[in-house]
Length: 160
Image (cartoon, rainbow, N blue to C red; front, side, top):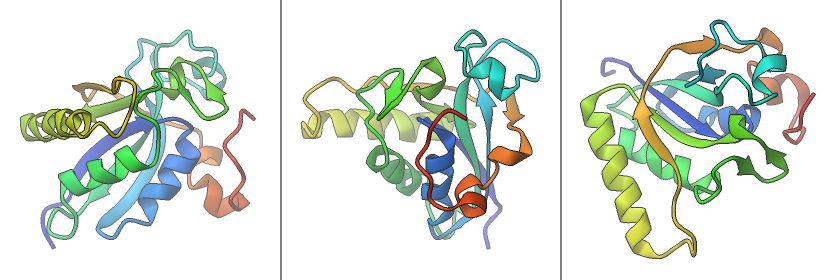
């Protein structure tokens, strides 16, 4: 096993995003939380208002000998609509943004290239609005959000 690495993605409601990545071979652990905002130790009720500036994100610990960062990005592009800035499906708000929080300069290069390559394919009619920004403080979400689908079945993402 390689030295585990971290990746952080926002792609809408973190329940479904976490579930999608938990099933990727090479992903060792997942946790949901909040990143990118200005409020210290935000709680879900604050984040959902859109006033904290945080996005709902999934932080992954993965084995780069099994799954590459590029492969994780390919999965990221498939599980949401990167042309929607603050919306994924029925979930609307700044906390549902499409965002890649990079942890290293290498991740930034790979993410930027992957976004450019995807734009060139013409797969989407609208521009890709996914932000690629440095990883910031990750605030772990409340325990009832962790592994939500595993605990509650495949319930659709919704505000609770």
